[in-house]
Image (cartoon, rainbow, N blue to C red):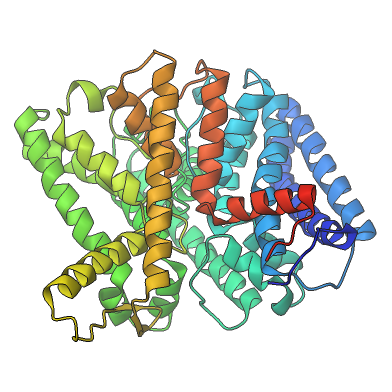
Length: 507
């Protein structure tokens, strides 16, 4: 990255230009629910979307015209743009939500917007069961945009060349290089998502028809369920989440989509090219499979010990679905939130918390610490143990498989993985202590909720609600932002702001 004595007008111009592109893209997204609202005669919703889309398009078009530049992006620019894009995107995404009248305050609408874009799935909306079709579609569509990445969606629509925007791609927690050209990589991600959109929606449509839904309602629920499942967002069409459907076939399709969403796009590319062995050899898929199996054993044992369910089929069905929902960071629920406290004992909820903390794979739509970092931490632990046991003269090399090849575990890789892992843990603890300070919930509840929010999961035990304190809501908004960007872009933004204020050199 270039050295900046103090970010100047050209730097701010460049940042403003790309943020304008993000707003322009978000405005175009709002046109979809606008059309649905007009077709359905939901005029209040339509006016809210028109206002939101107009603001985004006007500001975006103005910045595109006034701030256009051919200057190349540096690493710092990319990180700052990405960190700001998610905040500004959530703010503007919340405008139609607030105007709809279903949220108590602009802060509530901001929370919902951030939850949607970060694919967290926590909601503070009022009267979800009677939400207009267009507004519900909008909430779920935002998960699709956030799942692929706001910047990636915009790049695919507007960018002209890969060299200038490589830092934007990598700064959005897309560390794995799928294709040499970043624009082609971004478009491949949308190709995968589009393919699953068609297949997943069709499968859900059939499953819902079998479950007794009318064709119109079946399609409406199918498209929203797809967005919530593949993009691991977890928003619900109905307040009762997956319990509303009472269908094993729907749950099976949803689990398949959740698993597909948590697989990294690099592994999707390998599968796309007919290389299934990569899935079996990759450190991340092995780590995720091993940790999930351990959590499943602990979960089943805990449910048996607590006597929660009267038969093994119910226990396995509800337990497995909840675990998959947690591991993939989706947040779909087949249990009432209080059940985890009142009926599940101690071991089963602990397994869910562990699964939520780890989350899915890097460079996917999933959240959490990521299985890659956990796998690297485990590799580092065994590397250090062997180094202690071996003679000092012994040369020790630890390797792992990722990105289609064998890699050497280097100190900087281990430090980076461990640092982010610790930052997630600290974030969980801060969130839990902040909620505990309000005195309305105990440490078990606040820790469960903090892990769910910080990992962008969305399984709620009841702490998140429209009545939650504004201060806690603000903390949770920051936690969702940090978790989705995995800290690096946010820290780069803070460093950039300090550099801007003090004029010190920043590398």
